[in-house]
Length: 397
Image 1 (cartoon, rainbow, N blue to C red):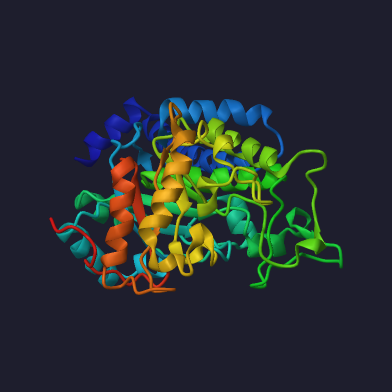
Image 2 (image 1 turned 135 degrees about the vertical axis):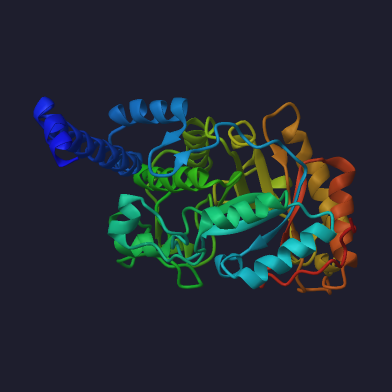
């Protein structure tokens, strides 16, 4: 046997060398493709748009990722989404996830909205983006995101990633040149002590596009962008604005259009969270949010129509929170005309928490749902910051 092997070696003296070199170059190729994924992420947040267009185009055509395998190439089937909001802590808790899946399976609910980047600006999953890792803006609270999404998908649950944009205290601290500044010097802070990044900065746009793309590759069905506006709460007289001659709503339109250009061909839907008053007011409300600037740039607009957040005297009501039917009915009636023959559908956030009135018994939750479903099939989303949900107010399956 030894002699036979020696004869083979003598007959093909370079055979082992060729095999070793083959494995070497294969390893180099795999490493190179993996690095290219990181480079793509870097290019998404770079200042140059020239080479990035070619890379993004290639990615969108192939839909292939060497580090994660073949990803889905088509958007999920559209549905009338009836969802609820989960923090990353809740979604990262197996026990809480089981409770939520059980609730969804027993009711009309069919979707979850999960924080991937919250009010703190922290990226809440294990990110491979260069800038996230270098700036240390990550706090992995979700754990194995792909396994989490699969668990929901196995139960026919639509999974939305919620991503805050311009309220981003951690990025403002890490890159103060990208932040909103105060006339008193230093960063500007809102009444909660949170810093914001400048909505006019292209770097911020690219940073968030990169995070959204990574979330889509992980398997999310939709990216829901929140805090897509200029700040509103705090000493606004101290804010240094950098939009020059452009109105705030023009800046926001440009940003919505940018998201559309960069992400509309990705295999996920897009949605934008707006103040509830956008359904009634179209002056930008000093924050740059108008329906007309977004209805052709996204798939869904999600106005936060919590009755408790409307002021005393709205519609002549002493307590709007106790009159959700009137609040929702009025907003939907006035706002729906802006969605006629447009790309976007309206999908309101509704109140599922006790404030101004008792919502936990379900009666006022049901009232909101009924008013929305009378005039729209875009769906609705339940908001409860504590993630305390029951079947109260929901139809049983």
